[in-house]
Length: 375
Image (cartoon, rainbow, N blue to C red; front, side, top):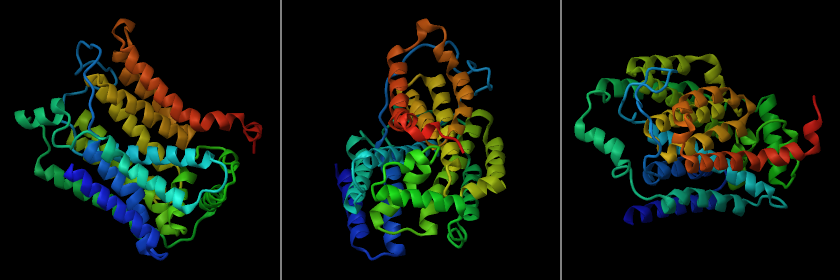
């Protein structure tokens, strides 16, 4: 209870500062904290609900022909990674629903939305990371499995992530909004003023419009640096998710190599420095793979729901996310077939979660007359 009180106090003070501070770097910092940092930290701290193991599988360690999966301890970055992905996804869905309301999106309303999303894990969560997942982290600590990351590997991962962030952060705001970014910001401005057609005219997912819209709408202003910073965060989180997946499947050496290749890749650096959907597609797609592998191994309903949510999030960013579907199906196949072992309730909930997330945007998008136009 005391922990929740302090979280509520910090979130409330951040919102008050965001409302009262004059336009500038301090105000934008408060907006960034309220929308992206505090909710992610809160989900990592409180969002530890678990569900019993469901379904049966003969050999979880060798059930997938995709890779030879060896049992490993949960990679340390997986919980905050899920929290970051969930923070972005819930912000997008909330912004989309708010945009559907008639009229403009007033600053007080957008700010209240941010406060509500930041407080959601504080009230909805059921514990802290220390007592969550008793069948996972606690058991690993007790048995002291030798595959835990040594200090040298942890330091290497830390330095890699710092270097990844610096490559994307230096001079992030020095260049004015370029062509595609300008279009996105103009659509965000029109959406804030109540133009209901902007998301349908965009001809792709709404994520890259809605993310800067939230910062802009809650602060009343936006600059190149602060508009791009959430995409940088998603980019670094996506690379960390790839490291986590590679570590789980192939070990820490391969994980470091995979992370290094992505960290210095020119395309990946560029996507982390502009207002574009690619970083979100990579983040949500990799998180969907991580949780698909977890569901294949442990059969926890929570993982299946997160697979559906993150896959839907990727498709809300862009149709490119469909490319990860075959890999997800391959990982989930041992839990899908034969049908007599299928947990119909869990799969029904997963399909419902994915369908609702996608339907919120794509149903009105497909019904809009602009969908039939090309060019």
